[in-house]
Amino acid sequence: MKRISTSLLCGLWLLCNVAGLSAGNIYYTDGNNHHVNRANSDGSGATSIVSQGFPAYLDLDLTNNKIYWSDIISQNSIYGANLDGTGVTQILTGLATSGSGGVTGVVVDPAANKLYWGTYTNSGTGTINVANLNGTNATTLVSLASQVGDLAVNPASGKLYWTSPTKISSMNLDGTGQTVIANLPFTSPQNLAMDSAQAKIYWTTSAGASQGSIQSANLDGSGVVTLLTNLGNLRGIAIDSAGGKMFWTNVNDSTVHRANLDGSNASTIVSGLNFPQDIAVVQSIPEPSSFVLGGLGAIGLYVLTRRQRKAT
Image (tube, rainbow, N blue to C red; front, top):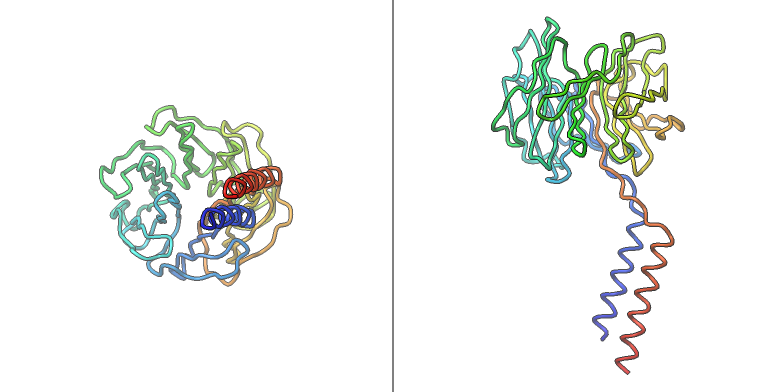
């Protein structure tokens, strides 16, 4: 009887403490310092977990506790590692010709065991490519007449999104159904972030009259909203939908910033970097409502009381 009651109470204690969990770590690349860094969501505890090459774009695979990033110095390669930076492995290499192009955005679809990446050439063309997460069966999905920047994937709808110098486009994961969802001729869209829970896509820009903006839209490109402007030369963006936060990097002042999803309460959380690039965030765990916690607590107490009565 005592053992069962203790287990039940411990379970309730753990459940209640889940409500106190906050957003997880942020991961970001610091190109000229040759680092992949990790920090708490408020910027504290920043540390380098990988130091090599010129890490640029990155993505997290939380299903397998992995991080992947592109490196434009080390033979235009893609690397993978554990989330603590151990076990660094070169997944793919020779993805572009040095001096005439490079590898760009990297995005993971862990459910399908797929890794997607983009490339660009100095002549203005690009490709979108796919391989298994271990780098096998690499193939080019599409060859494009414009350079490819960042990528984002929405497995639920089977769509992949990418930036090019003047627009954002989407296609099916097999490369069919290419569609321009947003024409942005004067803003130079940079990096993308998917908010699948709210069916939104976010992006940063680095040019235009309001240089350095953050915008969002529905997944079909409708409902474009400018959330922040005049921020400077932006790169990476990450969305914590459950936590109601967005994060981005700024090349001009070599910083990482955070704000609410509507753009309010913007603040600098990491400084002193050297050409920061992409950023990703571990999603917050939604906090259980007081109604749910109260109901579970009542059920627990009822079961405990019933067992005590039977014991007597």
